[in-house]
Length: 430
View 1: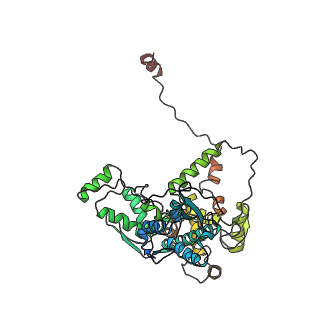
View 2 (view 1 turned 45 degrees about the horizontal axis):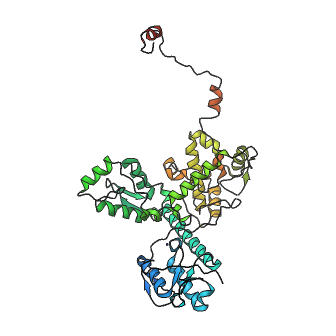
View 3 (view 1 turned 120 degrees about the horizontal axis):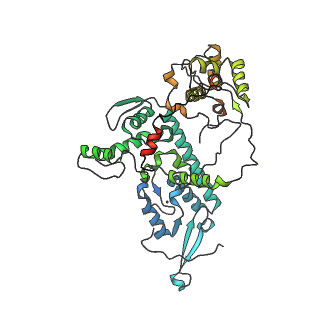
């Protein structure tokens, strides 16, 4: 039997990206933030139930009526499913098989002593349940994010100028950042984008500033306030927005600010580390069209040219591609092939193998669409997070041009010092 601490209870008291197979990403993801749902929250012992927004009412009911406390409720990804699971388990076995027993007023008279029960993740079964619920939630969020990335039916007006945007959400978000200096983050970092924009639009319609959240008497006053005070941004401390950012589903019970600050502290702590014995492991770049890997730039380029007829050097020269244009082109081709689509003619196939056979048979290996199709900000982001091929790219201005001018001296034009003596004589420093 576990030790029974003393508890004084008051009547008023009451919380993954693509990766190449040979270098698997870490799949253990901690629980994320909760999303509002429609399933009711049920009592573990009786027929009492409440809608999700009244979660605190149910928790107080469990405490006052059934003397049960659930630890860290805010860290449970799916509270309705969590409660249903334990409701079933409590019907099968006694409560004391799962919960720590806490005796109140243990030093007082026996008639005033009460036993309370704590359900927490110290119990392995509870911890596993929480992890499974979070993993499922994370998979749902990433699936939703991918759908929004690929969605071409997006249609919405700009919140600030009423310009109409159709196609992909990134066009609107990039417009607001570029034309109105209003950014809610990179499109690929956001999920439930339409709901996010609805939330922001509702605040503006209510004449509420998005940053300081003060309410104004009319739209003109609100517009002038946000412009003059540089309040064309959202309030990062408003946790209402947490569910719209993927990062908040990756760290258990932490916001993006906490995750970011931890990363910064880790970098600061590592500054004094001794790296003298560090040895680099060779990084293998994967071919765009098959699973072949090479450890050098020349080898992977030669393989793609000889085996598939794809000459990246030639494309770089003919199109005069800068470094970031090469990055976007590689990421574009990766994404199209991953989605079983021919990047040359945009034809879709049932599987990746069929798409690759079509590309080879139809001679579409070196056939690229218009530059506007792939020279887009969304392709700054790698399709595969460990794509070492991106590390082999170089700027088109480097190389031969640098070789030519490497020996030339760059002329330095001196300042006019013809009257330097007079300046010295009249200087206030003299």
